[in-house]
Structure formats: structure tokens, C-alpha cells
Length: 88
Image 1 (cartoon, rainbow, N blue to C red):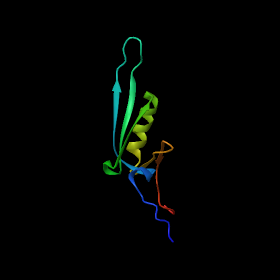
Image 2 (cartoon, rainbow, N blue to C red):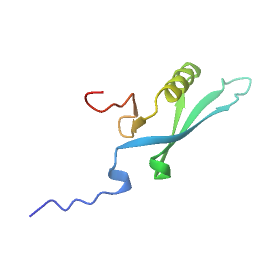
Image 3 (tube, helix red, strand yellow):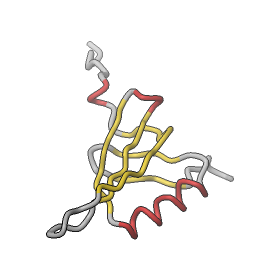
């Protein structure tokens, strides 16, 4: 009997990044501000919000612009850049 495991939105761990938005929330006199990055994955099938440093925001922005295809591993919180077919 074949494995009848259902594939659900929660079971897909690696998704393609389609849109992103950086946001900055200013801190008060006792706290620094905070950068967040909203990810829209697989045309809106999944969204993720992560906190990043200002330096990470700069690097990620450059990588997003430089790469046509970006994937994000939800479980490991890992970006994958420069996805290429074998032999290219």
C-alpha cells in the first residue's frame, strides 16, 4: 500500500519568495528601533515576518535585487540564492 500522506500548506517547507517588504519601527528613548522583513512566499500561500538587523537588511536587499529566484526554507529560516539548473 502506497503512503497516503497528505500534502498541506504546513507540510511544504521550502517556498519561493515572490514579494518582500522591509519595515522599521522607531524605538523610544529607552529602546533602539527594530527592522522587520515581511516575506510573501508562493504567491501568497505563505507569509513570514522576521526581525533583521540594519546590516542584514542591506545585504538581503542587495541579494534580492541580484538574484531572479530566491527560495526560503521555513523550518530552518534559511534563504537560498542563485538557484541554477545543473550544467548552467
